[in-house]
Structure formats: structure tokens, C-alpha cells
Amino acid sequence: MKAFDLLQPESLAEALEALSEAGARERAVALAGGQDLLSELQEHLLEPQMLVSLRGVGGLDEVGAEDGGLRVGAMATLADLARDEVVLNSWTALAEAARSVGSPQIRTQATVGGNLCQRPRCPYFRNEHAVCLKKGGQECFAEGGLNRGNAILGGGPSFIVHPSDLAPALVALDAGVRIAGSGGERDEVVEHLFTLPSEGDVTRETTLAAGELITSVKVPAPVDGVRSTYLKFQERASFDFASASVALALGVTGGRIHHARICLGGVAPVPWRCERTERLLVGQVPGEALFQRAALDALEEAEPLEHNAYKVPLAQGLLRKALRSLT
Ligand SMILES: Cc1cc2nc3c(=O)[nH]c(=O)nc-3n(C[C@H](O)[C@H](O)[C@H](O)COP(=O)(O)OP(=O)(O)OC[C@H]3O[C@@H](n4cnc5c(N)ncnc54)[C@H](O)[C@@H]3O)c2cc1C
Ligand code: SF4
Image (tube, rainbow, N blue to C red; front, side, top):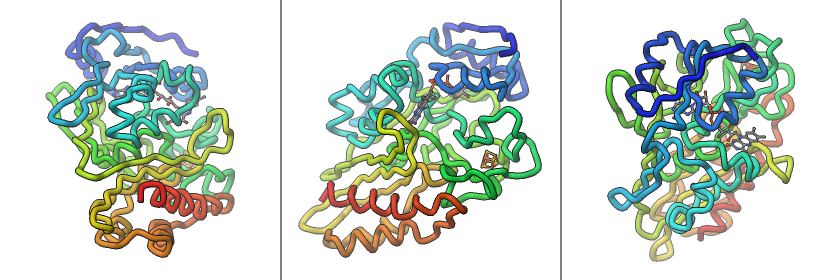
């Protein structure tokens, strides 16, 4: 690991100043729980001159009620979310997603902001000797190589899947993020925090500008009669990233579905919202035939690579199971 300076600011203004003064992205990098960043440094994927630790920045780790909804500081840990009974009861998908991440040790250190901004797990990205497209090279090695864990939806020219479990849950719950930078604060829906490789800069996964930080996440008040769940399939039972996952928020009144938000994880470079499938469900009477139609519809555009076609029936099965569990 290359030597770097460690700055430990006590205020957000100080942290933002350090990040913006350093100028170019990757010269100074924010350090949260370090669960991803430190392994990137060890693997020589990143060699910043300075780490700006967010640990001492006051107020970033608070979790509390706001306008009937939930405000979660970017430095709140996944363990904070996983054990919060209010979160579990009102925003179940979020608590379930947090509980599904890694191991108890990882959840104690890993933060909400870091989970959303973690880098991809594609084996070529993690190999310092493989200079693929995402690292400024000329080709995507996964497209014709090891691609068991890669994207079946929205891929190209890079085929990463976004590794965050929180992100699909937050999209299904219609959450937003507050972002701070040297120019001030802005709010963004979580869905628009992420960017497809085909949308511009293939080296990035988020729309954050250089020097910007997520300061909190806002989850709106639960919609009347709507419940949510997060289901994840992982190859290793102890802890693993999602091979595929489904976050679902669903409401049924008078025997008909009145609200549906679906987001798939582990299958695309971004949390993959299924808006057409949501429209297919709303107004319908829940039942197995409808769930089967929804599952086929959600994966209709899937274009598996050589080794990951298994993700199609896997994601379909998870969606059917989630629909069953909330009706
Ligand atoms: C063994 C193992 C298993 C794992 N399993 C899972 C899993 O099943 N599901 C899952 O979702 N994740 C999993 N993870 C990933 C883990 O959840 C993330 O590494 C962790 O959430 C990152 O959070 P952190 O606070 O440690 O971030 P850091 O490692 O400190 O930072 C990660 C990145 O985010 C940036 N960053 C951090 N905070 C902010 C902020 N507030 N604003 C802007 N940028 C920021 C950093 O600059 C860095 O680029 C696993 C990790 C390990 C090591
Ligand atoms: S999927 Fe992305 S990270 Fe993986 S090899 Fe292709 S370009 Fe690189």
C-alpha cells in the first residue's frame, strides 16, 4: 500500500474543503468505514495522496424521524439500521437489506454512504494487473471471460453489477440522498444517484461530482397499506454479495394492488427499477398467474453473457416469492 496523508476533520465544511482543494478525483478520497476503500488501497486499485476520514465529522451518523419519514446519516452503520426496530417495522426492506450485508463485523464498520459508493466486485476490476475499460483500458475482459457474477440487464460497455444491497431497497422505498459539495447542498433520488456505463463515464458508478459527499439518506413516510421486503440469493450462506436480489414495496386494498415499486439488485450496473412491471401489477388482483407474468416481464430485456443465464430464473423466482410474501 502506498503511503498517504490522513486528514481527520471535525466539520463537514473542513472535509469538503479538503476534498475540493485536492482537485482531481482520487488525489483525495473520503474514508468512511474503510470496508471497501482499504481493500482497494491494498490491491493498488487506488493510490490517493490523502484520505479524508469522515468519522470525526459531527452529525453524520444520526438516524431519526423527519416529516413522518426517516433521515439516516451517511455515517450511520449498517448495524445501526439492521437492529433498529422502527426501521424494521416501517421500512422492512431497508432493515432486511442491511441485515443481508456481509458479516456482523462488516456491518459494524460499514456505513450507509460507503455502501452506496462502494466499487464493483468484478474480478477483473479487483485485479490490479487487469486494466479493463473501467480502469481506463481498451476492453471489457468480463464480456468474453469470467462473467458468472456480471450483468444480465443494462450492461455494456462494462458489465459490472452494482454490489450494494441497500441501494435496491432504497429505490423501492423511493428514498433520496442529500449531497454536499463545495457549491452547497442538493437532493437527489437514490435511483438517479447511479449511472449506467453506457451513459457517459464508464469508470464511474455514481453521478457524484468530484469532491461531493453523501451526507444523509431520506426515506419517505410509508405509504398507507404498503409493506416492503428485500430478498437476496447469495452463493455462500455465511456472507456474500447478491447473485440476484429483489426489493419490493407493495400495497393491496380491497383485494387489488394499489402500489408497487420493484427494484432488482445483483443483475445490472445500477439498481434496476422495473417500472413497466409495476404498472402491470397495479389495479390487478394478486395471484400466481399475475406473479408469473410480472416475473417474465421484469426480466424480458435480460441479455445474459456466457456464464450468467442462471440469474434470469433466479431473479424471476425471487420476485414471485416477494410478491407472494406481501399479498
Ligand atoms: C467480506 C465482505 C463482504 C461484503 N458483503 C457485502 C454484501 O453482501 N452486500 C453489500 O452491499 N456490501 C457488502 N460488502 C461491502 C461493504 O458493505 C462495503 O464495503 C461497505 O458498505 C462500504 O462502506 P464503508 O463505510 O466501509 O465505506 P469505505 O470503504 O470507507 O468507502 C467506500 C467508498 O465510498 C466512498 N464514500 C464513503 N462514504 C461516502 C460518502 N458519505 N459520500 C461519498 N462517498 C463516500 C469512499 O470514498 C470509497 O470510495 C462486503 C464487504 C466485505 C469486505
Ligand atoms: S465488467 Fe467492467 S469492471 Fe469488469 S472487466 Fe468489464 S469493464 Fe472491467
